Image 1 (tube, rainbow, N blue to C red):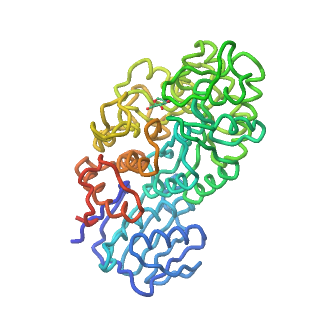
Image 2 (cartoon, rainbow, N blue to C red):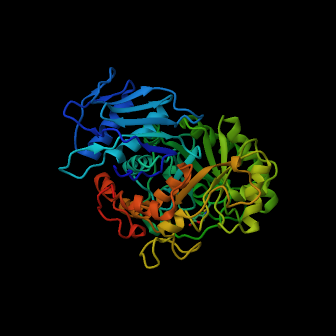
Image 3 (cartoon, protein in one colour):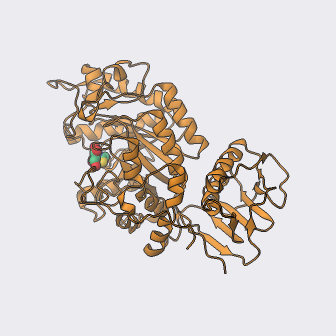
Length: 492
Ligand code: TNX
C-alpha cells in the first residue's frame, strides 16, 4: 500500500484509492484557463520536480495536470478537490482561490528527490479551510525591509496556504509608506530605524507591487497604521499632531507606550481621514488595521473616544477596521470591527475582557496569543536574536499545541475569524533572520488555521520534518525550532 503523503496543512479529507499511481510522463502538460494558475502551477511543478511542463488553456488529456471548473462542495472560495491517478491529475474548484490552494498541495504532493521518477499514489483530496483568515505579520517599522523581501515572503507563506499578510507599516521608529498628501511622513519620518540604521519606506508604486503580488498568490495585504500610540515617527514629521509638551525626536530604541497623537483637535482627524482614505484606495482587500495597542500616553476616555471615531473613518472609506485587543475597551466601535487578541493563552482577564468586547459588539477575532505564535520570541532559549517577554522561547511544538477556538472562554466558535503569527522586528534585521524566525514555526500556525482536523503532534512533527527539502528548494533556511528538520525523503 502506498504511503500517505505528508501535507501541511493537513487536508480535510484524503483517501488513497488503491488504483494505479500517477506518473509524470514526458507528455504531461499543465492545463488551466486562468493564466495566473497556469504560471503558478508551472512554477510549483518546477520546484517540486525540476521539470518545466508545457502549459495550455484547455482540453486536458490523460497525462495532464488539469485545473477545471467544478463543484468543490462547501461555502469556502478556497475549497477544492484533487483527483490523482494514472489518468492524470484533476483539480476541481468553483473559484480561482480553490485552484490556487490546490497548487500549494500539488507542490508538496509532487515533491521528488532529484533523479527519481515522479510518482504520486492514486488519491482523492477534498479540502477547505477551517478559518477564512490565516495570516502572518511583518513589522517593517522597527527595521525596514525592501520590496523584494516582502514579495518573497508572500510566496513562502502562500506555499502553506496562509492567505493574509499584515504589514505593520508605522511605529515610533519609522513611517514606511508614502502618503502623497503628507510628504514629510516619509521624508522626515522614515529616515531611521531601531539601532540607528538608515530606515527606508515604500513608495505608492512599491505598495502597489506588493499588493498585486499578493493578489496573484492569493494573499490579501492588510495594511496597519498604528494609532494613537506608536506614532513618534509621524510626530517627528508633523510636530503639530503632538499633544502639548511633547518634543518629537527620531527614535531608534525599543521602548513602547510613550507617544500619542493629540486626541482633541479636529486636525488630528483630518490627518487620519487622509491617510486612511489613501491606504483604503490603494488596498483591494477588505481590511485596514489601525493599531490601538499600548496607547499608554493617552487617558482611557480619550483613547476610547479616539478609537470609536477612527474605526468609523475606516468604515467611511469602505473597509472593515481591525485593531489590537486593547481597542475593545471602547464600547462604541464601528460596526463589525475585528479585534486581534495578542494576550496570553491563559486568558488574563485584563486582556480577555477587551478581546471579548469585539464579539459582544458584533465583531470577530483574529487570534495571535503572544506566548504561542509571536514568532519574534526566541525559537530556542539560547538563540541570539528574538525577544523573551511573553515566553522564554516558543518551540515548534508550543506554536502547534493550541486551539484558536478555546483560547478565550465565552466566545462562540463562529466569532473566530482566524489566526495570525506576528513577527516584530526589534531584533530582526535581515531576510535570513525573517526566514529563521518564521520557519518552521509558521507551519504550525498554517495547520491550526487551515486544518479542520489538525494532525496529532507526532504526525505534524513528521510532516514538518518532511518539508526540509521543499525549504531548500524555495531558498528558505528554517531556524532552530525545526531542529532535525533534515533534508529527509518527503514520504516516510
Ligand atoms: C508588543 S503586540 C507590541 C509591539 C512589540 C511587541 C514585541 C503589540 C500589539 N504591541 O509593539 O513590538 O510586543 O513582541
